[in-house]
Length: 304
Image (cartoon, rainbow, N blue to C red; front, side, top):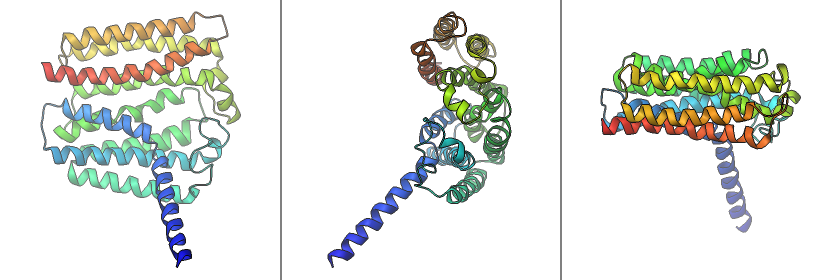
């Protein structure tokens, strides 16, 4: 009797542990960002839909993002075990079988796309399909080991969720959600290049041609600063087209100017060298910066 109870507890624990590992395959941190940005896109759209339809729509967008994450981990399992940042992921640690991850990712992809098409609209489903396809085939399989510009082009997949949020509400595309796309697209390179500065050994070990490895530290620092400058006209654009008001414009510019400053501070350090603390500061602030920009979209929507 005691043995049976222990066996049931062991099975229950193993099942819970396996489900937890499957959820980790979906990259919860990335999913949380997708949920947030797609929700902002939905709430700032000129059309309104029911709370139920909103939640269901965002749920399928998050599921699609999780599917892309799982398929990314399936394909990069051999690379992940070589890097300190990724070696504890479910497949390298043996918590999830690699083939199971592939099946899981495919199933999530199909369910999320079909679900969004049924509960929302075809435009949103096509955009979600494009997000998954671009992240897996264009970025992960094709570009990541081919060019140091991988993260520049690959950033398009991460920039689509707020656009999908908008189309869930409106069933149409317009110029306004393009500003969401451009913000994330031009934000992505400086964010990841800052990370690659102090994780360069990991990328080199995995033979991933990140910018510090192919072009050197100095060129990486310069491009981080240049891409931070691109954000100035990008945050002005929503105001220029009449999408947001003065509060968004002024606050977003102040946040951007500070981002420019810390990126320049990183750049002006000794030639062909970087200060670890400053690189980490750029990386950390970039996350906070993107989050605040999207919060400002919500605040602008409320007060206007």
